[in-house]
Image 1 (cartoon, rainbow, N blue to C red):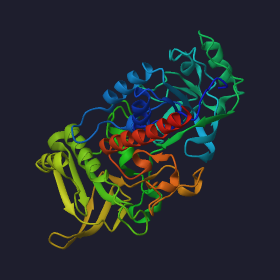
Image 2 (cartoon, rainbow, N blue to C red; image 1 turned 180 degrees about the vertical axis):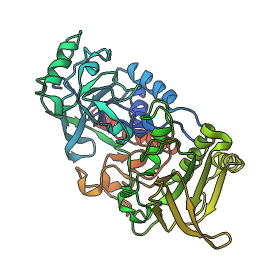
Image 3 (tube, rainbow, N blue to C red; image 1 turned 60 degrees about the horizontal axis):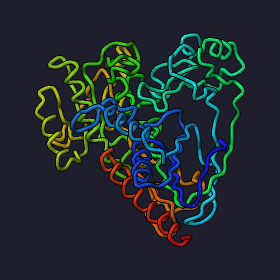
Length: 428
């Protein structure tokens, strides 16, 4: 990594999800030198974990492929995966950044042939699938991973599995002596695009995620429905592997709640509508999806999608804030208790599976941020002059859907470009 060259006319983008990729590409395609950091082995972030986007229900692989192609063709952009910012000092136009780079144990010689993964036996919970499946100790994060290079889990280094992987590699791409590195770079502006994380469903005790096997989160359900996911696209109950044909979606799981997240996470209503559509596509008349909601927040073309889902005969909307979820011990079914506010009658509804439309919060909390910036009450970075040339992009700035996150990232790139242009002008 000693070959990383950066100046105060370089833009640093932290986070390689859809927002970070967008900001980095927009700046690089304007002729600016850009360094993009990503802590995982590949770019793509949360978007790469989606089965489909709403409202068109198109596959994210299309957009990722286009961005990957743009990245490959741009010499102004340097990607450093498995990297995190350790510290930031300095001022607008002249920041010094320490970056920690974790070892991949696999070099650029890798062709992603997969031979190392075949011989390694040790398995780990698959973070990409939110722990719903297993992965090998030598793995490619996902099919669209960029860079297309395998990575060795550090837990197998020094074991027989690591030696087997090295021996199986035909391209001399495995370096078991790789060490963690720390690099220092100077940049003029920083775009912070570390994205969001699902709110911890274990904290919502009334909904039973911590004790009922057949209560899962919306991000987990998304992976279940993906043909490339842990179940091959089958909607299976965690408790017994049976198909779940009667599925409940609980809205505002953690969001709009003074005890959890005060803000509306914006994506949850549409995610549940999309998930109801998945059930309909999978099972047709044999399936049943019930959405328990406070209100549906959908506007413009999003509202058109809402109306289409409402017309499906096997999708039901129950206007209610679910009070509690308990388990039927005889069959493992979750039972939802609450009051339907349209008619004001109490219910105790049993379903095969419950999906919590989980809230969105920043991936990097305010108390772990490497430099002082202005945060709002929800922990998102505010646009404030005191932040200098540190600009939030996408879900680091607010709870946003993909479309709005991309727009926001483009705006952040324009702000960063203005900074480095001013630096260039003052030095010229």
